[in-house]
Length: 121
Image (cartoon, rainbow, N blue to C red; front, side, top):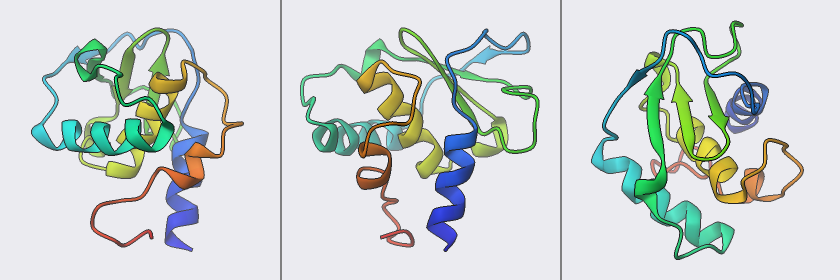
């Protein structure tokens, strides 16, 4: 049930939209590379480059309480500051980047977003 709620929150937070005005660029922590490797393997894009992504924080990502992250084509990912350590949110946005799509039609959003802690398996 907790996994379903977190996935719902991540899904509700994604769109290809206008870039947030309050954005601030950040260097991704080392864990993001580990999450990227697992996610790109799961999606079937083992050669996709992590360094192509520009990482941003923004407090008004989608201007609602459910917004956790935002992917903007081509390779920009925005995260609320309080969600920067949320693996399920970060990996969800990574899938958008790998697929280069803003929709949630792919089964990868269910099958590839598994948190390393094991809580959501």
